[in-house]
Length: 252
Length: 261
View 1: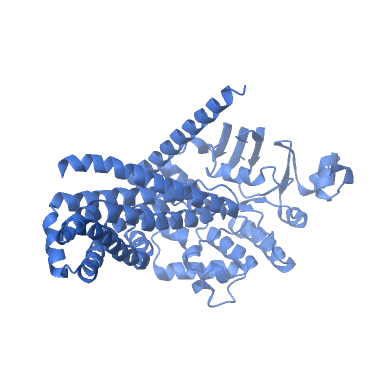
View 2: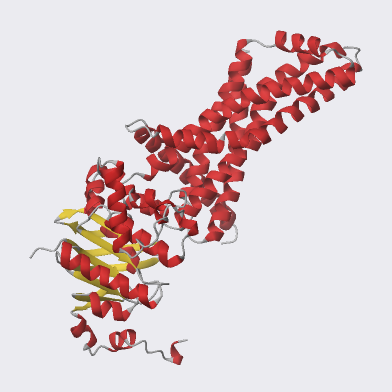
């Protein structure tokens, strides 16, 4: 099956800081693909390259075979209608209510009536476990807890029913019950709607539970890609130490 | 090496200046190109006019009244020495309408608008809200820059008109109370001294300042790097850039309008 998103021989740097060198991988339609790796190595950059939020220096970033770097404004808009992103801190719009946040993409891309948008917003908030609060639609992001903001951001991303969702550390800062809820939601979206998910995370239990494949970023590439079982059985010391959280004092 | 270093710094500063001017021109071009396309975002523009303009009214009031009073007092004192205190209205009119009200309004209200815009957009940038707008298929320039640019360009001339009226009232008050020149007489000499081109030059100045203020505020906000400290740095840079731009453009516009007037 042709990959839905493919990165081929990608090079990316910020000034003198080289992030990717000849980096390649592909994501199959319908799979949950998890990216792991050390902090500050550029995992989130990878997600931003996929939807054209950051330019790449060389190589190819392809969505359904089309070069993202060559897309004009209209094609990028269409790409972003199909590929949604959940940001690390939620990135809810402070000046808008939860309802306006959740329905933002619907207003941009569809001609749904207010009633239809209201129903979709409720459905999405139910899905992320915020439906119990009847007033939440009218609350401002500043009045929500960190976990609620993150889940509202998730609701905003799924409202447009994208075919791919990019998650940038979706469970960071959440309590164990909400971590489990997010993991359950990723699996549910995959099973019921066939959504492709690309998850950047440090949360290894979520990575093992949700993923079809896991890729580890190491030395500006993804040399280790495989099923959760394959990655866990990988004998490379860097993989073993990372996934088991092994720390050596002499590394300080 | 040590001889070359100052030249390297100068060269670097010139390059940074060109980068900045290029970046800001590109942003203006993109905003104009996207802004004129439908939907025009009238609701967003109106919201920004309220946010940037209406909320600046108290400061504009204070600035208008006090600059009118201070300048009239200064001119009155000087003219009394020549026994020409009755000409205080004529003397104050040109300085206020052509120069002081538009420029001081831009330096105070304009700087307030620009820093507010930079702080807001800078915070949105560091919390990835600008990326989120783009990721949801919307255009951040159309959604964020265009309404603020239009609002500041419309707002500053309106506040300039408002400030002129208050400066006239402040001047008339001082003329009457301090110099015993009747307020009605001050008003008549004030208005008689002014020609349409004087009002036009004041309005063109405040229109230009409004555009600069909105543009610089948005550009600096979009250029904010990472972390809350970066928002502070961007805001400080905005104050400097706005002040310099206003002073330079004031001089340029004055040289253009003076031979005409």
